Image 1: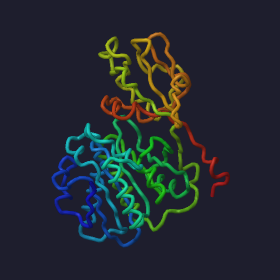
Image 2: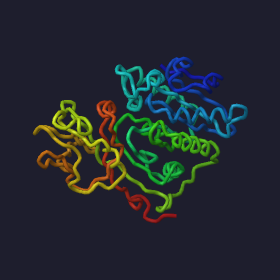
Image 3: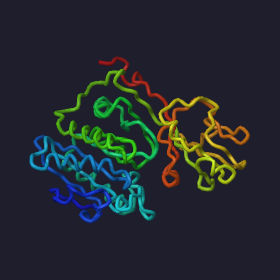
Image 4: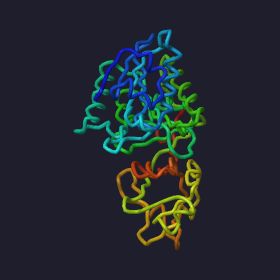
Length: 341
């Protein structure tokens, strides 16, 4: 499935994400030489509806179209077929950000081929650019909390999320090769997300090295994922007044306003219609911990304790394809560095 190029066709510099399928045969890895080595690896459009990464990279390629890059660049343009239709993935496709583990699908082999190329070429750092469908601040995600990875993450912003699930995520796989981050750049229709991602990638290309010293605590708000919240397949759901008395779970229309906010105990999350209306909540070991975080109070589903949710979405398709959101807690730096430099 993987096409490998060592050049950028001129028409690529003017393509919208929805038109990339006309230029690219499928997932494409482009390796471009620069003044420094090894290369910065950047992946975009692992989810076809998350276009900020492509628009930021296109702007970067346009900027350097008549000059050598300050550092070599390895660029993966992912699910161009889903991007054609503005979808996260097509119905017959796996999630392109869950395929970075051994498997039998063609997409697993494509991901393995990318990793093999990066091992052969060498890699300075890895950046995977994403959007989310709910209202969230911009933040970086990491699967390692070593100093160089956190130095890379805080170039994007002070808020950093440490996660170890779900399996098969690209950043998790590439953390074995080099410092690796996922950038969450807000909603795809926000222009400031494009500029933020562009500036981060521009700065990374100009880095001589990543410092191998701890990030000062005041420069980092480190969080980690403690649970994933899903709506079970058999439970119907909707948003707003139209869903009440019709759906098993009726969430408020502005549910995503709770993202990255402290949500006090007993906060109502949804109206419930039947005794079996519930959420599925799994901790990082896969245990069902829904009763630990939510309880039913009459026709209301409420939080049992103070929660810190993230990536809550009101996009029904994304909820069915992925999840409703995540629960976070702070991850103190002193767990790793008792004495900061």
